Length: 195
Image (cartoon, rainbow, N blue to C red):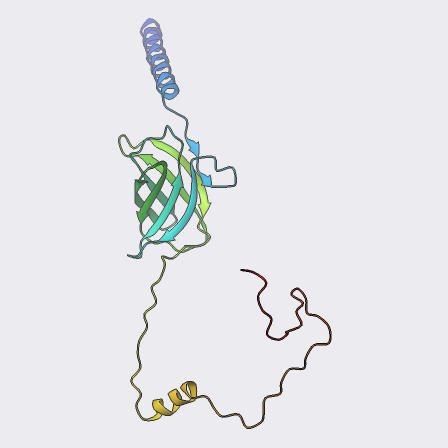
């Protein structure tokens, strides 16, 4: 009986050793997970350049990634209420600049950001980052024309008519000294000194 237990122990130990060696070789073949941070003056990629909102109300996350980074990845943002996937695309003609689009999240609070390979769901980079603010898209200005009616007409008249002065406007006195930086004797109507 003791012999059987000894043989099973050796076989089990051999099995565990082979699993451990196989696991070590697989770990050494994978690239290490990079730290994902906000970009700083040195811009060491991968880093988050900015957060914004597109014209459809989706959140944009602009990224700077290393040259050797796979172009097929997505961004996952994990918060206490769940996780959200953001699809990422390369900015045309800029192979290290990407933008990711997804659900708009409110600023504040630290969230976990993960860049994940689309091919094999391998974790490429991760970091805990706070969304400090969101840049909004450029807003167009719409001008409307009011059609005056009743009381609006009298209000519009106040802004469009120039009231007649009730007192004479005093003239500014002539200077006794030359004026800086363009001293001319013809002040207050100096002639330009440039062609």
